[in-house]
Length: 566
Image 1 (cartoon, rainbow, N blue to C red):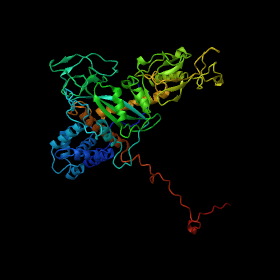
Image 2: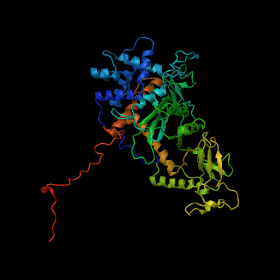
Image 3: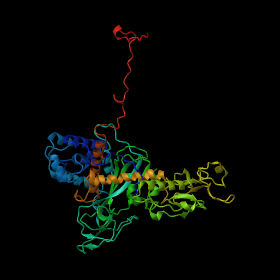
């Protein structure tokens, strides 16, 4: 995507902080479990689960896994490696984690598997058989998988000793990245059988093959999509073609991330990962994005959302309208298919262009402005933004927004952005305001007022006029989520193929949240060190020194000498 901003929220994206020792890692893990608020949930799950009590509890397994990752975020998440590291801890440190005096690798593995089975969704193929028989029922009092993962992630928004977590930034960026399954592909398809409207611009057919035509590819009995590996919940989907990959299709899962993107003019912030969600690759991105927003810990605490075309090209009733109903201002890019003029359904004499309502008096030179180049220079970008800013003076301005999504628009002349002969008050505006070419006495829509229904042009319409400097200030912040994808895979985390051997959506969600926690903690330590940014109490350094008043009478030897003149 085009970089529309020059903000640099972090001095460096590379990890530069001091490595944690074992004691600090254990302390940080216990802090995260405590801040997440999941300790009572896990304890209740332990007490009410029928059968023999576990030697290693759920909370102890999660704490050990978190401590293992936050000490060295680039470690791969494998139970054998976690158990080997925990064995290196001292007995008091193991007791702090909640481990008994005697435990084995088998205890950690079975506890992780049991937690995975408890968190499995109701419609999972692990609970519903091929013939539709429900083999196991999910506990109704347990959090959903997405809510559980985001509650655990919320514990990483602060460090031990801080008074509170860092507040959310006003703008959040959402995006999906690929999680390639560890399982080897036994078959392949020409194209992913995705249920999404979005397809990359450079999508090319692949060579379709299968090792055993009788067994592969299998068909999922819940979604009817093709299965090409032993990971029966993984699916074939699209991803960005990078690193010299021969194809942009992969077998695995889509990981959706919500990241702090700051705000226009904000000088410094840490792009924390605020929400995650995992779905089989090729799932409907719009529904996954809404599920992510609804599962955030503490609810929605921001007002602007920016996303790429994977979400914006979804049907308006599936994405744009629900996002607006949640009180969010949506900012996105436009595909070439969306950049075309079309008349308004509710108002004659006006038309929609790039998601904005314009009167028919809009000059021809503004009706087809070029798009933004991928590698354009800053000068070219600024000049193009200036042209869009000039065109925005002719745009209709929102005057009132209704709860059902309808918007009342007023014409540019009535808004004071345009001089029109048919609207006398606008003729008193200065010469810096453009003048329309409307014929006096003829009907024009430069000063019209009309309520436009929410369904009209919802696929393109957004809060700020496309291409303007103000729009770019918000949309350019979307790059922060791309940076966090790189942090997870290359710079800090280890979210790559073969970095874990687990199968299924639930297990990969737990692995993803461990990586996100480690990245968040690593970035907070690099950004603030031992300083608590949430502590606003003044320190001795911040308080001005108290002024001392000189005594009224001084000894003779301390009195200032008078200057005498000759």
